[in-house]
Image (cartoon, rainbow, N blue to C red; front, top):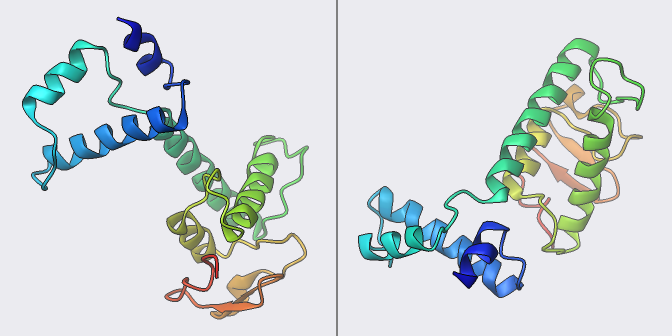
Length: 165
């Protein structure tokens, strides 16, 4: 009974507890698609009995990120740039989301594991021509993109230089 509250509120006890939760979710997903996993029907039932939440807050964060990413693509297709101002009437929160992506990218480059930025997100942002610094020219003008401050040349199929070196 004591565990139910912790499992349902995102396991606020410790990092180890949150990691354990995520491991259970990953093992469950593998089990469901037939991959090798320590998850069993018995374990699933036991976890269900204590009120384990199979969807994490990170699933919701992924959904929100995807929505904002699509809004950014729409904005670019309409305006042909990524300079979204705070007073943008169609979507006032988009400029804040862009600023966060730039911040999370810097954290990712520095090896900060607290960031929600991932290699996959970096690739997707690069593929739409996203400029990591506002001062950068639009990289869509040239198939080879230079990310300012990183001094690494990127092409659509070469993103390993984005990852922390």
